[in-house]
Length: 362
Image (cartoon, rainbow, N blue to C red; front, top):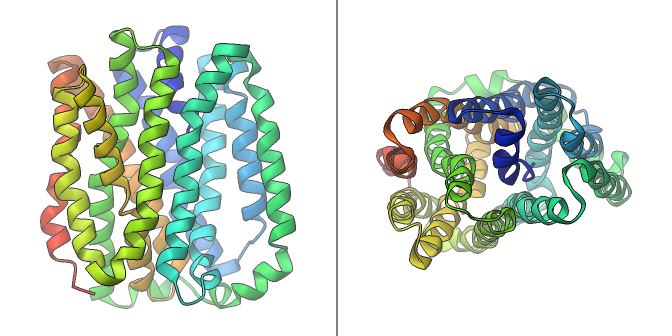
């Protein structure tokens, strides 16, 4: 899924897209990869469906890797959305069984799960940028081969029988538990809003900053390297922060993510054309993403025994709403200029500070 960010300038040029249409593309990808997750969450909480862990990465790799040979913009959107659905099918099931595979350290287990996804997402920009610069845009289907290797390896390392045994508890629950306790439901919605606010800042970076960099003459490989570094640091930081959460508390670390990440992002935008601006952008992306596994785990603890559904709300609904926000941000960028729009996106996580303060201490 990380392939898409550095492709934005290429797609704009190939299909003649405006900035607002770029926001629409980002929105449609988010609708498929994020807002569909609650549906998959309900399905997995009710029926299990462990095969999604093997098929989802394969389908995502296949469809997204074929973007380079799309003959039209319509086909490009179809391939992108199908790939996003594969991603949506993986996350709720993967996140819901991770604590059961983590022994007495669910925080670390969830952090490793989240870091694995973030590292893969981080590798995407550098991989696709290098691949296109050497072999060209139309050679991207070759990159579906590693996805097939990953899916086959996962099936061997975690056989379906073992997976069903370890997640038997999850296959006996339903959505009713999620709605049974109003206090838990309010807490869950608060966590969704916090993650939504953080993701508007991160998605604003990944959607529009490549366009801004291209306008200032940055090569595709530089764009890929910047976002790979930013997301990789965030992945590593999430493991450290999750380990630290037993001492510092989840609420404190989530609050730091929102309160510190936004000023770093705004400062990075303001000083972007200097080396200090690049450092600030990387720091902002790192801080805004390191709290993600903590939010997922807290949501599962307030899920009423519906862990896949709770995970899908954090990783799906909040991500999806953040993707929808890219459309008005794109319109704002066309009307008021790119710098003002990026400052709005970067400062957006500050809206969640009050909600962070209302999280009970753990």
